[in-house]
Length: 259
Image 1 (cartoon, one colour):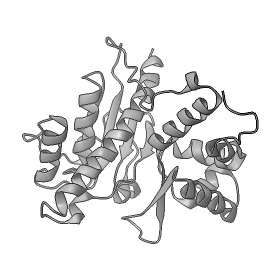
Image 2 (cartoon, helix red, strand yellow):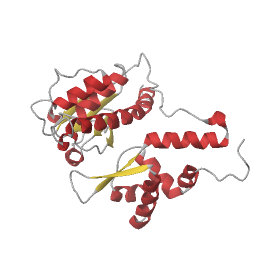
Image 3 (cartoon, one colour):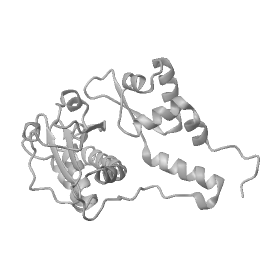
C-alpha cells in the first residue's frame, strides 16, 4: 500500500491541466503544427507553446522539423510512453490497476464491411507501402488498406522491402508504387498522410473520410549504405508499426459504426 503522503505521479499533474489535456487529446488523433493546435484548443500561441514545452520536457510529446517547410515543426504524442505513464499511475494507486501498454486489435472476425484506409506519401516507395503492409498484416485481412503517392517512384526502395521481410516476415517485393490519381474516386474511411509534403497537396475524397497526419521523416534521406541507411528504415518501420497498433482500436470503432 502506498504511503498517504506520497505525491501524485507526474502524469496526473501534466494531464490534469485543461490546456494540456486538450493538447494531449488533439495529438492523440494526429500530428499537428503549433498554429493548428492554437486553433484546436482555442488558446493564444504563447500559452500553447508553453504547455507544449512542458509536455516535451516530460517526454510525452516530441517535435520533428517539417520536410515541407523547414520553419515549421510537427508535434507528435508518444502513445507508448502515455500508455506506460497511465499504467504506472494506476499501479501507484493500487498494484492491480497496472495495465498492459499495447491495445488489443478489437476487429471483428466477420465484419459487415471492412474499414478502408489509404496511406499517402510522396514517392509511395518507403513510408506508405510499409504502413500498408504492416496494417494489412496486423489486421489479418479485416481492413481494406491501400497506399499511394503524389509523385510515385518507379520502384519500392530496397530497404523498405528488406526491413519488412527481415523484421516482420512480410514480403512486398512484387509490389509497385501507385499514383494518387488512381484512387482519388475511391471511398475511404481514413486517409493518413505520412509525408509533410503530400499533406499540403492531398485532395478531397468522396464522403469526407477521417483525415490524419503522421509526420514521419523519409528514411531514404539517411543514405544508401547499410550503416547509415538501413537503420533509418528500421526506426521508421518501428515508428509506423507502433502507430498502427494504436490505430487498430480506432478502426474497430469505425467497424462498429457501420450499418
